[in-house]
Length: 190
Image (cartoon, rainbow, N blue to C red; front, side, top):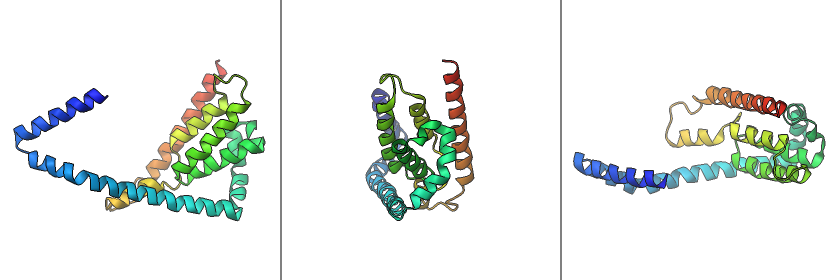
């Protein structure tokens, strides 16, 4: 991939000089760092805001009520392992953080859940069903409040910041369901 990038960059530079568009290229090179900084600033501040909201939800005890509501869903997704409180805390906070669109917090609680699941599995070299399901749920991207995408669209002055929302939920739910079903089918044939 590094070779593709290196030779592609060289090809683009040569083409810009041959076509006379080298001024636009240099302008893009000069403006890119400030655009990247602005984008990273928005994403980081958005994560901080939602991280703060999630911490308030945890401190107020509301997370326990939300987790209680999510228990049947998580039992359906993960099975009986959610009855163990040490794993359920991490799985529920991971699920809630994903639904709130706070991927950073979801990753942290997902890693903690993975560590607890790893300590309980029979063969440490082969991931258990719950570990595979956790990976599927985390990578599927099901989010009811996709804060990062909304922040990026707002930063770039989108006329309809939520225009993607219904597609995002539909695609995230579809990928999650299909991933879990494929996982169960493959598990059945092992």
